[in-house]
Amino acid sequence: MAVKKAALACSVCGSRNYTKAVSVNKNHAKRLEVNKFCKYCNQYTLHKETK
Image 1 (cartoon, rainbow, N blue to C red):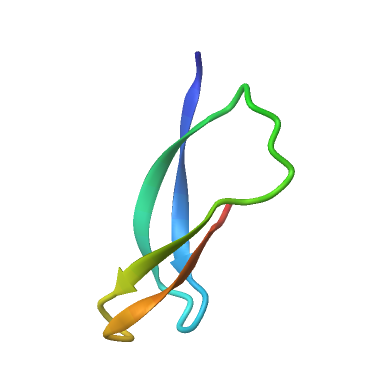
Image 2: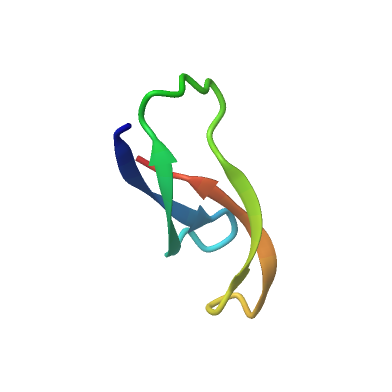
């Protein structure tokens, strides 16, 4: 099973703070969205999966 790394970018400031292992075999139409702490915004914000 192949796994690739996807970066999670803050939706407020756009900084890429986190990486997440994502399965390549799964066909998911939506990108991953997670509430994470952004050290640049100093608050919990929505982080979206980038390419």
